[in-house]
Length: 123
Image (cartoon, rainbow, N blue to C red):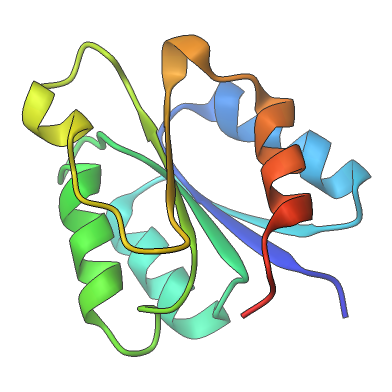
């Protein structure tokens, strides 16, 4: 069975780039453009990895991160957080759980996620 990634973010261009690269590597990719849809999708679909934008319109991505880590259905799923450097410093310095990663968008290259996913252990 193919590995499955969930992208939660409102940046359609970035999500599309990541989706294209991951699909070329044989991954199934789900995209949620709202936090509510992203949480529902994560709870129902149980992806192998979640790629989360740190800021969303209706709720900060950090709150979504914390909710995913509190819920036993998603607590063990690795999360890659993409931070916008313009965000408040408190969001950039979140304490990530083991197996989670963080990137600043200004230094982020979509292929970095692919390389990272290739080295991540399956849950």
